[in-house]
Length: 236
Image (cartoon, rainbow, N blue to C red; front, side, top):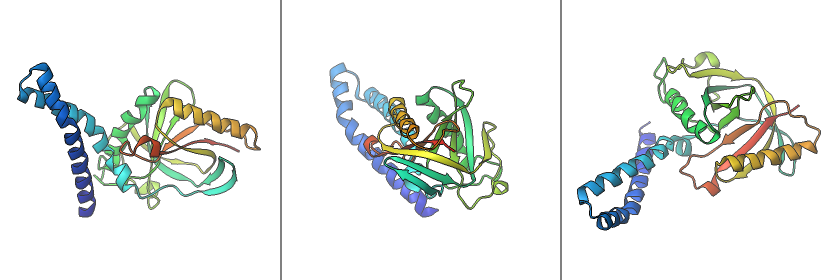
């Protein structure tokens, strides 16, 4: 545990140092251009810096400590299309009513709170990847965002969430059609690759049997062009 804390602290320090270095000249320029007092300018820049770095620091565990990804068996692979068999899995999930761009950020606070001790046993649970997001099947503009629970846990072993908006549930075994891509997390990018998946499936022997799922494997600390993402959909 001490090594983990040390890793997070070191990474946090480097992020802060980089931002301070980058914003130093900005603070100086703003102070001169506007004729404001140095102390007031510094406070404003610090406020901006805090707002910029907090989301990244909150997500550091995804990038540095993700130790478990659900196992699966590849049943078929044709070009970019992969068909996987997943076993029964356990997830912590939460329902969010928000637009596509905001849903993941809103959900993360709840789910991260659960694994970082916001539960009946104040128990810390390892971060995993990917974080998944799927639209609610009734099409009312809500999304379900999920964290997979590490393989060593059975459903009965997991503590109850203290946040009533988080639930722990079992996801049945399933076959999933998957396409992978690198790139940013924009809604436009997601839809482009979802359409690519559907086009590939249209020429295959597989039939879509559920809602598409968006899987993200990295945190915002990873440059967007290096982020690993997948769009998947249940098939039969």
